[in-house]
Length: 390
Ligand SMILES: *[C@@H]1O[C@H](CO)[C@@H](O)[C@H](O)[C@H]1NC(C)=O
Ligand SMILES: *[C@@H]1O[C@H](CO)[C@@H](O)[C@H](O)[C@H]1NC(C)=O
Ligand SMILES: *[C@@H]1O[C@H](CO)[C@@H](O)[C@H](O)[C@H]1NC(C)=O
Ligand SMILES: *[C@@H]1O[C@H](CO)[C@@H](O)[C@H](O)[C@H]1NC(C)=O
Ligand SMILES: [Cu+2]
Image (cartoon, helix red, strand yellow):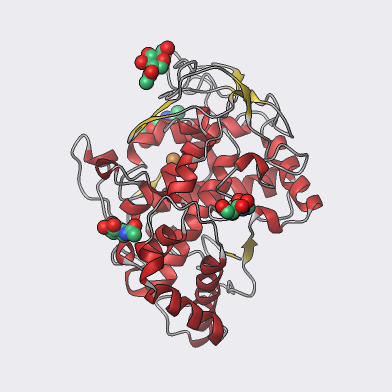
């Protein structure tokens, strides 16, 4: 860790102008993220070397040096991006392994991930297992790409702060052959309902109009559509084939994909305990605060804004890798609390339920063995997970 970078971070943290800036600045600097990234890697390396940290990785041989490295989309070479896209398309063609009676709508292996997410929605969001459940879900997806589709790389992520002003011009979503597809075709509609009120429509709303996922099909959902023109499926796991739709908008990313929000989550007031951290990340809707997680779903819009079936859009996994990266950073920066969880077993504790425990299982159906929350808390334990972010 270079001293200069740490010093500049401290200056940044001390500078009231950064933290006091209005949220809707549209600032998109990734420099402060990189400073923290470097610090996290240094902390994880030190932990492995001294064997004195909360956990040691010596037993399994998994360490920062040997772990799989998840990278930002734009840092992959174009051939690497194409390899990833090819593997995702493969998963969207392989046959489903779900029980056809329980999940009549699943046709592909990709749909198995959609079905599991839909089925568990009300026990994996705004719950004690939100962060770990989605972490393990992404890890199983990465495994499926590798083991079932011959992918050689790691799951890439979408750095929220890198291109928040216009997704349609980003390397991730510009509709080129090396992107995850572009915006939806124009579909006249009046906007979408969000957790904090009505949002204006973007320029899309229809089927994905360009790139490798042009006219991609979704077989399950919508379950909780938020846009006029998207009709709810007769039942959550029914067969309801249709094109996958997007409606890129910039209000959510410009407002919440900000340096101040990121620093608040990782080193600021929102980072002090896991309850505050995960709430800030998922949103404080009563305060009109969407949070980075919901902002990402809202920025893609249409199918991606459906709490249950947003996972139909393959960009979901890049979004959730970034979410996991922020959690991974928070854990490294708050080592004493890295195994703490907060929250109950039901969404917003409705209906009321007991507090989640680290011994709770994360049910994954046909995606892989269920593991406990405790088993996926450390991405370098080697028995269950072995990856880092760069
Ligand atoms: C849905 O979730 C319930 C509760 O975890 C489980 O018993 C059931 O097997 C799941 N069904 C499918 C189709 O995954
Ligand atoms: C970052 O923000 C600046 C100023 O708002 C804008 O000109 C630029 O296009 C943005 N860059 C990206 C990659 O979104
Ligand atoms: C948007 O259109 C739908 C159906 O056409 C209507 O039900 C809804 O009230 C409209 N919302 C707004 C905010 O205009
Ligand atoms: C930081 O997070 C805390 C805790 O949720 C919140 O009260 C505060 O408004 C946040 N600050 C900024 C600048 O977002
Ligand atoms: Cu989810």
